[in-house]
Image (tube, rainbow, N blue to C red; front, side):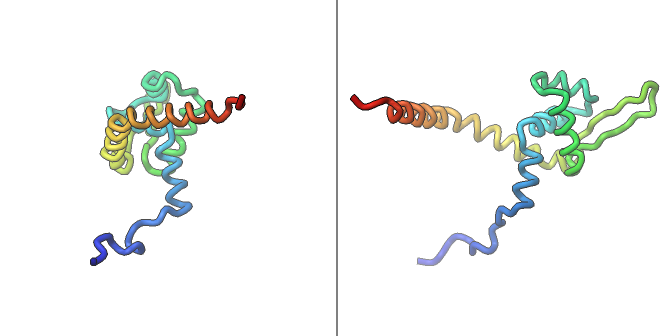
Length: 132
């Protein structure tokens, strides 16, 4: 029977650089920042309101990571007082369909995941019980 899958060498390999990029743009706060900025540009406090559970320190770190990776741009306005606005870049927007697909996948599979977690936790509790 002929092999139908493409040769292994043609599929992308998960390298250290891949892991680093994925860690930096798909972490908890970065996903929420990208989601908020897909709706339109926001200033820092607008992002804080859009993501109320994020701390100032975590939001600052996420914005810097996203800016460094080209997903977000920081725009300083020539107003008085000076204001800073954050916008998603075309590179950042290119993640929107992927993020939407992941959200859809989690929505569809969450009931199965919750069942698996419950079975695992019940088994772990049963194994912890002393034998009589």
